[in-house]
Amino acid sequence: MVRVIYINPDTREASIETFRQGAPGIEIEALADKTICDSNEEISSIIILTNSGTVPLHGIILTTGSSAGVVGEPQLQHAVLDPLKVKKFIVPVTAPVTPVARNMLIESRITGYDSRGIAYSDPASFEVQVRPYVSIDKKVEAAGKVSGTNEMETDGYFRITLRLRNTAGFGTILDIRDELPSSMIPQDVERTQWKVSLDAGATKEISYNAKPTESGSFTFGPAVAQWEDGGETYTVDSEPITEIFRVRGSKAIVEKSIASGYLHAGESTEIVVTATNAGASKVSMILTDRVPEGLSLMSGKVTWEGELEAGASKKISYVVKAIDIGTIRLPAAGADCTDEEGKHYTAVSDTPVVYIDDALNADHSQVSNSGASYQAYAHTGQIPGSGNTELTRIEAAGFMLSAFITLFLLLAIIPAIMYLFIRGVYK
Image (cartoon, rainbow, N blue to C red; front, side, top):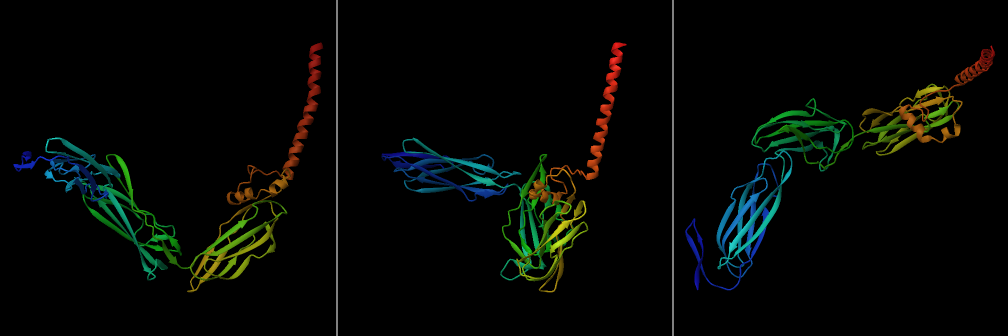
């Protein structure tokens, strides 16, 4: 038996076949040529149809839709697909223009018929991530670096390039920010902030140099683009830069600490000064400190001179005795350094604070065991748990005298009041 099973109205072609037992089968694989795309970018939705049945599939119709994008060919047709044969459809889809990253759902459905007119249908779908229509890319290059490494000397510099792109069909104005590590300074610009006008579909680049002022290991954070759309403010960051750049050179760190920042007159405490060679080469160092007025040196040394290898530390400590009452800010300790190339530089410490008291009502044992509170005072200048008040011997004597006078007056007034009261009753 021979019968017509499909007529294509566009081409006026007719498909005929002999009647056979069995049924067609539909297997669909749906994917895109990109899983991530830009706003307003055209991608391809790829549908692969396999007839896994035993008889041909006729009158095949592919319909495609999208949750946000624009489908170039919402419907495609194919006359017949024999058993175990494969047909690939390609449907163009244009991504939406979006100020924020979002997912675009693409859904497809294939419908076909066997020789008896029975319909067979199967859906397929997938998602594509759409980037914002504004993008910013950041590239960092080390100029003057040692060959084959990411290391450079402090006389080198970094070349930073920002690439801006607008894929929308309209222009926009961007505020660009790019923060440098704290020890780097921009060389050819006053600051690393710009206002940029970007036309529809346009791309622009911003380039500048950054110079390191000290040695160490550095990473660069992302650059940020900000703009307004429909009354809302949006931001987008550049991709993270995972590369670590090392600047070789000399660097010293000086730290100064005091064991107790709260003392009574006559008590002693230890002061520790630590110098660290945080650079990449050996340095010659003269480490010095001094004892301020109000304290006296009891033991230890306040100076040291020698060489420190890269990464090494030197610690000096000495004991001082509290003499004068009041607040004393310790002077900064300093390190005068000379590196292997003969370059001179200086590093200084912070200036801790010590408070010397002559209180009568202080619990001496409690004060001695509150090292953490004393350390807090050394940095803030606040007396732990005292509200920053002072009670000296003179103030204590004055308080006792005023209390005695008040009590005497009360004892003198009470008999007089009683006398007047009795006289008024019996008069």
